[in-house]
Image (cartoon, rainbow, N blue to C red):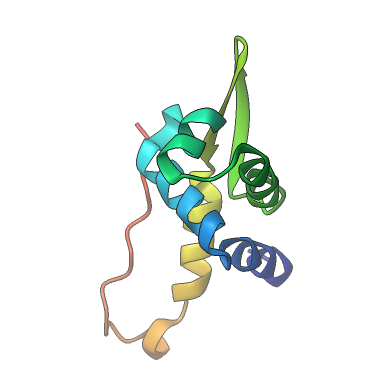
Length: 107
């Protein structure tokens, strides 16, 4: 993963609302959630949520898929796993000081 992408991802997550949105989408899994469901669950105004979804999407951490008349947002698990791998690469100078985080496996 390139440093520029790491910086974009971390910058997108460095906001309370965006971090909360991303965590909810990770929990939701590949099926994703609609913006209205996200807004209701998180108590975020729809116009503010739209801005945060755009920022997370531009960072490559989430993506939207149209299903009928609805947009479903879901976490981009490969991007999340790449970010975690980058952050833990060469941890403790190669010593096994901590258990490396497992990658999220999709069904």
